[in-house]
Length: 327
Image 1 (cartoon, rainbow, N blue to C red):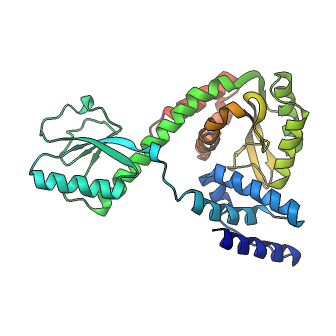
Image 2 (cartoon, rainbow, N blue to C red):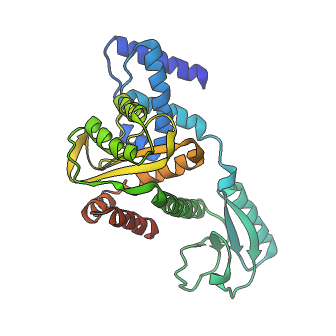
Image 3 (cartoon, rainbow, N blue to C red):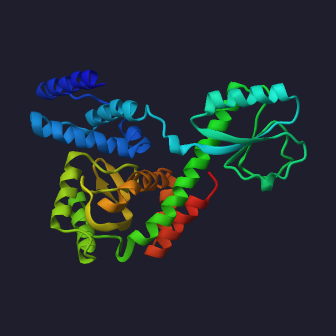
């Protein structure tokens, strides 16, 4: 990885000296797919830019993020496995073979905790994240149940993987809902803020958090410096400015919701959330950062929040409603 990355950086430096840009049509998609990986790339690019005396634009940073993502994404999260119950009446040999194939194909996604062999099931009483069933669940309406064939097909594997991703996303978003409410203060919520540029908006929201005793002038300056390195507009509706350090006295988020979009790094955004994290909340950073971006990824969601979020409580209620909505 280091050898390949070093060659890539060499090419970046060459293009910079020759004033030849590298266009990456996936820049926005990379930022949206994994904001945290993009942040790692921004940090690396910033160090390299300072050390080598070159400018590294967003498209080049996205190229770096794709390389870094291929490295950090290679190790599965062992703690992320979901629980599953397999419902499979019939011959024992067929059932055992099905379980082996499921575990071989999806063992990194879920753990099969038990196997049910009866035709009559109390579906609601099954305690698991997912239920993989070879028999018809008789219209229970339980979205945990995934119908599969007794002889596993590639389509079955894809369907179970999609269901696992949906359950994991819902779990993360509900975790975000419970975590984020205490981090917002009524004095740090601004409707239709009078700031026409990113730096002015960061200072306006930073002032609100400074009045709360959360951050100081150095944090605001650091957030402005981070913005200069790469735009924090992660969707076409949302910008999430922040510093590169977790130096806040406590974790807090200041929000501006504007009916009229403002220019932000080539995008026009309606919502700006200045995020200040403390060192004690390091573990929550990835979930909150990525899932907060995820909520706003759908333009319809963003439009609804902007339209109805005229107070902090209304803003949080709308986010909560979108989190709880079926995926």
